[in-house]
Amino acid sequence: MKTEDRTEQRTEPDRDHRPTGHRPDLAVAGAAVLLVAVAALVGRSVDDYARVLYVHWPPLLASWYPHIGPGTAAAPAVAVAVVAYGPVLAARLRWRTLLLSCWGASLAWVFSLALIDGWGRGIAERLTTKHEYLRVIGRFDDIGAALRGFNDHILIGPPGNWPAHVAGHPPGATLTFVLLDRAGLGGGAWAGVWCIVTGSTAALAVLVAVRALTDERTARRAAPFLVLAPVAVWAGTSADGYFAAVAAWSVALLAVAATGKARSPAAAALGSGLLYGLTCYLSYGLALIALLLLTVLLLARTARPLPFLVLGALAAPIVFTLAGFNWWEAYHLLVERYYQAAGGIRPYWYWVWANLACTAIAVGPATVAGLRRTAVAVPGAARALRTGTAEAGLRLVPLVLAASLALLAADLSGMSKAETERIWQPFMLWLLPAAALLPGRRRGWLAAQAVVALLVNHLLWTGW
Image (cartoon, rainbow, N blue to C red):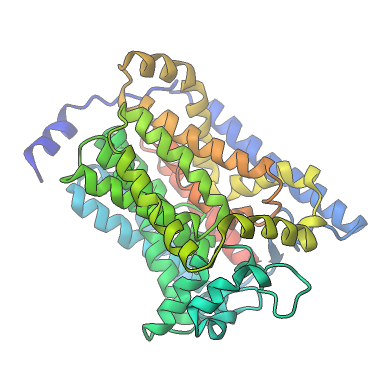
């Protein structure tokens, strides 16, 4: 370990920027449980009266299905190990070793949760269902022709309309799996492994960004919570986990570029732009990641990376536009397609708040408690940031708020009615570090995170 890293860990005072009492944290976590319960009861009543929610176990897209599988022994073992040793190792390991350890632990957690459903139904078959990307691989034999005609198949009605997930995303999402197939990694198993392995790196990206924008101690405190998050239930072989990782690395690269912690800030900013541009061609809604990128520049108090960021971000739009795909036209067609299907039937009045119940489940009670502390810290963080004297914990506040704002914008848009436990992963990732603001050893909060994930995965059959 570098000498400066040891010095920082030894001399950094053990400050917590929020009140140390646990009762308000527990009260907010309890309120989140109540919100979930109300969403479940109201949702069940709505569906008993009129089948308009199109989910089997509201508010989650899931079915009641208690079961066990190969991951039933492995997942609790991973959880116990992270709860018991995670905080200590996060504080003591060398930084690079910590990053590798977090990736390994995140991989183990996501894989073991997925394997509760079995190898086939949990991993190998997830991306081969009738709504998924792998159903149309054969229609991309001529990629240029597929891109030029992509918009012709978005709406329901014309012959050969795309499956729901293909129509609901720009073609960059489907092209990922087409290119995997071309590389000899075709089929659901390789696609599932790709999503898990790449998606698990998202935790590292958040750690890198938090360390650059706040300090190493705050990142280390957040590390176990980034690993043991309930959202891992939906990161397993969901393409949205892969999308979340691409978006997260865009933010991380900009963070190290803006704070001067990259060997080549210009190259890091250019890479950030390239990934942000790709993100927008993986999912339309992830254009909102721009709020996080803007927050990074505000926290770093610099606009120097901006030209390189913009230059990189233009690459994907230029390539796809020259290939014949019109993003803006496709988005408007998607809106029409959304209201042709379940999106036009699902009631806005219910999902606009039930989506938040889905989020509470996916981020877990520790994150909910951390968000309370984030909210309490807003006035102090605003004053400190204006004067440039904000301490590390306070510098985390704007990052979490930016993710919350992006999530709320997606919610209010009406284009995310249900399935948000999966769709909002790229935003939820940036809420998880809020748990670093919780005082004490926090093993109880970590255990609560694990229990939520294990209960959901064993009692429900989650789908997308």
